[in-house]
Length: 336
Ligand code: AKB
Image (tube, rainbow, N blue to C red; front, side):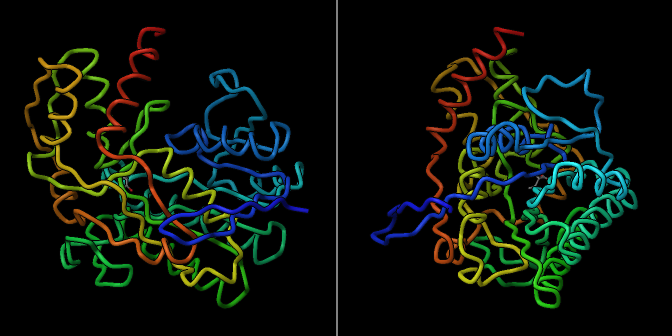
């Protein structure tokens, strides 16, 4: 039987159902989200029940637990691993992000789309029970209201990443409506964390800046001053995944993907926070192709639906995030 406990926010009490122990698979697990989600899931399901996968050979991977090499384009290999471990829930994180996908649009589309369909088909055929799949603020485009972008509004993505995430959202909804597939999703903003560097996104500057602040005392941003984007600290992102995945399915009113807000800042504001810790830190700007992507995205997000349906409640401010990033990175960089 699953455990239950209660949490309170905004004066309301929410039931937070802990997961029954089960065997789970994470794809793209060596990435920014996967490396932290794996630790969280191990603490819930036990090390022996969390299978992480990525494309790198085992001997190049420093991980305490079960690791399987999976090329997510290989549907037979995915099925083999799922059957071998009797996996019931999949966190399908493998994807090309906005910057990388623009360099190879057709491959970006194929990787992001074909692999999602592989898991949706497995759920339709009842091989697996449940899927988590991240969407992104990249689904929005220049026609979208920029401030406090609502859950349902105009979406005209201008990147292949955004197109693939938007199509993926509609596929999730389709498989849920037509076949009853339990697939759940959130639209992540830029994610900030210290354990694993970000890889290939438009929001990556907000992670890179901390490394360079500590290593060199200066940073050259690939986005201009004044480029406000929605951002979220990783602990809040992992908490959101766990809350969404442990909510009773009948409480979920959105089966495309939930808007997630959190923080909204631009490079100069982040630099000012860093200067409180490293007074000589300097920031300059050399915008590249990612500026156009950032300009097409919202600057802040309205996430009232996620709050109402499953109690989304991020905790990190820009101040708390900056202190946490710098304290942890100092230790990490000293070890390297
Ligand atoms: C990216 O910048 O591509 C990602 C995202 C916002 O989905 N971090």
